[in-house]
Length: 178
Image (cartoon, rainbow, N blue to C red; front, top):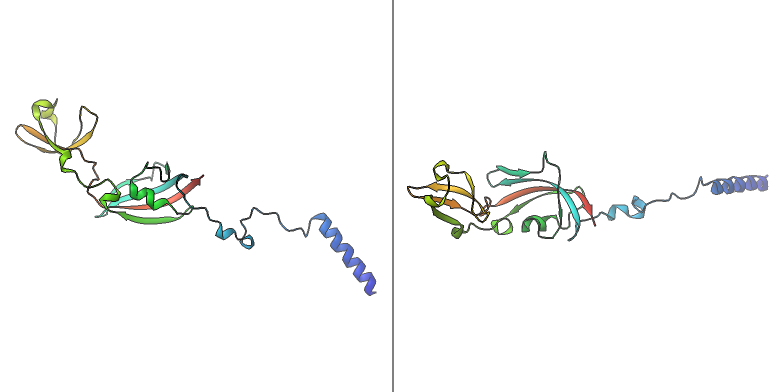
């Protein structure tokens, strides 16, 4: 009886193996037993990535965000972003989130006093219609903000509006492509 049982068991196992029932699953190398959890893709210089983000000032005022516009896409490390932002995303994994604070030197730089200029009203068309806080563009296409209006001159700041400010960004990587 032992031989009969062994013969039946051998036959059942052979049939099962031939039909694929007991074949190991073909995987994509991402299962836990194949070490998939250790194969998390991280952002490297030159990757095309997309991030969701929110930028705030030291007092918590939000100055920019991807919300409502969709993720921001750029090439990591290519200088398309401010230095601190570019540096922050390198090494992040897909769906990873982090909050980073950047000093002015890592963001839009310090305020450059030479970019705050006094312009004679007679050199500005429609000078009488300008108000403090209004945006203005120079003849060279440089954007500035009216800081002060005096009797015969208008003080215009041509620094980036975030120059001299410490910025905090919440960043979430939502796409990484080589």
